[in-house]
Image (cartoon, rainbow, N blue to C red; front, side, top):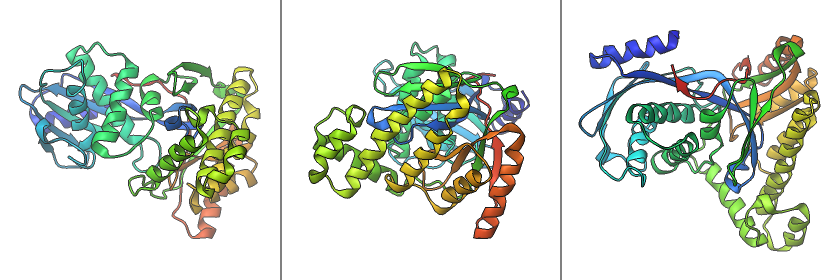
Length: 383
């Protein structure tokens, strides 16, 4: 509760009044299923212990006033919110109110909010810091205004904040993970049917650990690279004449090769094979064979590196070093172009693997990375 008290104190300092409450939502690590969520495929994220905390109180007018730890207070009228407005951290706070107001169930003009934000989720690391902020904010607003929508509808609204305010054409995995994950489980999500299955994760006493390495390579998705990959997938889907790449097979891909560009074919091949890896990983976890998922993780990284082309040298270095140090499997996690890797390791060797990665980064002249062991944690809730 320390962080909850801290954000409440930040709120009181900024606005001279106590908040109506404090809510939090976690960042996430994606175990496997990368760049499949916007193509109707399968993903398997887990919530991490690092969280965004939001203190909230309704206002009578249509202004959002907000303060974030380490930043000066900012404010914006809901009438001024739109694509690219506001920018930075305020986009996710004000954007949440703006999207909710524009949803069919809320057809009357809404009210404003006073909000304070404090987040432990590293920014720019591919751990969904923005989804954590948006989901904590939407859950606060939902609880205080007694919205009838369920959590998956709030996840869709959080996705709209990314699309319509922040300008990121993301899928729905991050928002679903932040709102729907449960402690001790990985979440299997069918992004087309919205089926959710909580898949048990081995307890810590089994000697199983997932080492996360923040490479500190800036994780930037707004420069068009993410949108470019998504466009390639959409084009391949159209050329192959399938409802989505989730419905395609490698045989379908082979039959369409003459009509696809090299880039379109490579992106499609990644998505088709990645969906198969997600299903294989789920089957192994559900049958109690968690330590056998390593090859699926490593194959996922190779596909993201060679076919989808979203890794960077720091990500490849961390994966190669982890495998050389004895990790059972390793891959980049998140959208790519920077961010984090994960490595499946024996718990007793996690520190040693981290040291090998540190040494590899030093040899390559990269900024020293950060490490932590991911603990599958609870989704968004009121503190």
